[in-house]
Length: 256
Ligand code: PGA
Image (cartoon, rainbow, N blue to C red):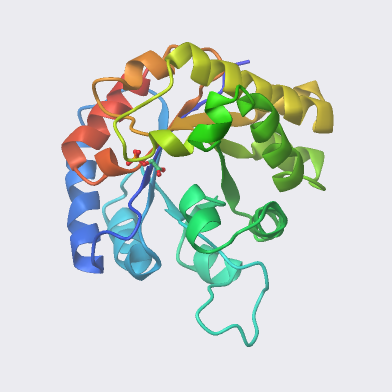
């Protein structure tokens, strides 16, 4: 099964809308020299989505747009929240759900993540559902069990077709923004176990189609090592996605 490689940039709480527009223009220019079938996604802050989507549309940039979060209701009195339809209206086709920073600082539980995953699919977007263990779990050897439970809860109750489209980003919390990473083999072990969990829930065809990204201190220097692993279908990139040069180097590493 040939899954399409994906490189997604999570801009976190960086870039004004004007800076985001310039960044995506720079990326577009550098991407012209890249040949190969990699799906490239950028996820600006909410306030940058309109400006970035305008650049993508007018310059016909081959980059997909994603948001970093979404609320699960269609509309209503939810001050400060953003509905799925508001994102699709701006051209978002992806949305990051359950990033560890949201789980940690905004108390997102697996149940909340599951609601958001379902709401994303219901509106036609593809969720990039983040899972990953804290350091203490890694050190106790419980990583696969911990991540499996996150997948079982976060991806519960989906249509089989949606499960096949799901993207799961495996991001060990201790690797995010730290410069530390698991070995590629160990990242692949967890990616394989995530795929097996989806297989147990939705059957082997969905498991073979769904994509698993690795995230956590992915840089131009180490990306290719992760991309060589059979169950790693790309990367979710934070820090290195804020510079067009380093982001596009990672995209290049994903071409095969
Ligand atoms: P990082 O972040 O690449 O800066 O480690 C990854 C992420 O949080 O998605």
